[in-house]
Length: 405
Image 1 (spheres, rainbow, N blue to C red):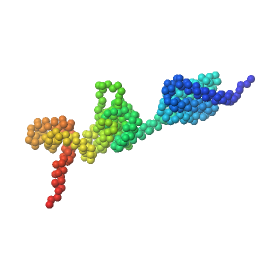
Image 2 (cartoon, one colour):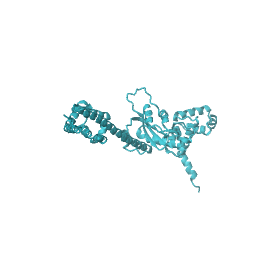
Image 3 (tube, rainbow, N blue to C red):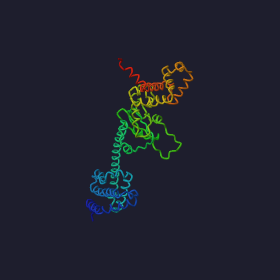
Image 4 (tube, rainbow, N blue to C red):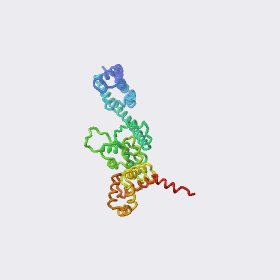
């Protein structure tokens, strides 16, 4: 008695597999409901979509068993049966669990049909697992590219001040976890920019960042991240210290930190100050790295930055005027006399200790110390701008320009 030809045996096996494919699919769905809690908790439409994937896998296996050279396209085609949104609701781990259950049910049903069929199932399940990994990898890559484009759009909206009602939703889509104050840091893009390393550093500092690369310019929008179970005695780092620790992620050149603003929606104000400071930072020969935009107020004002002019007048000139005209007069005289206490005292007919006391009061009122050369420049610029803007100065200018009869 001779053995049957292998082709005849394979044809009979294929015919049997086609007859039981419906039962296999039903048994697989039942096993999924019994063993995978996440499947049972799904809405009916998504359970149906997962069932289609399982059924497509069984049908594709039969086609593959008939022609193993069809692996590349059959394996990839399995996941085409599912709607695109299924990739967002079913993780790769859950997909591999689905494959494992389907293979287990099929192995149990074909037990005793020969080693060739069992080996075929194992080979095919391996190819399907690799195909699943490829599908999810491509989806993740596409999502990463989309996130990068969306992040660039958000940062550009902040820099240009063109924020609209859609900005909060776009920021939420990026997974922004920042809360409270926000500051913008502007520097140069390094030749080998490692964005992942920069994000890891930010996470270690308990801050969230939005990153924008604009040619040679690198922009970071920094916000304090919400940390669950944060201890009450944990001290949040000030933004200048955060900028200092993020500094290695930038290229050579100037690094400018904008002032802190109350929320992300106000980040445009910090961005404008940081960009204006970055444009004129080279005018300060010994500017530190990083440097705060408010430390560059004189250079920004000379370059025509209206925000710098307004800041100098509102934070220095007007508070001093409102507090005491003696403080303004003393500060003017002190700066005009080369920061000499004796010369100032002679001009004002007071004792040098009185000048020293008034300068201390100036520092208490506005927070800047006139005895330092850099801060003296800031204060003198503020006095000049404040005086130019006074009504008395404008009247004097009008009288000078008035033609004589």
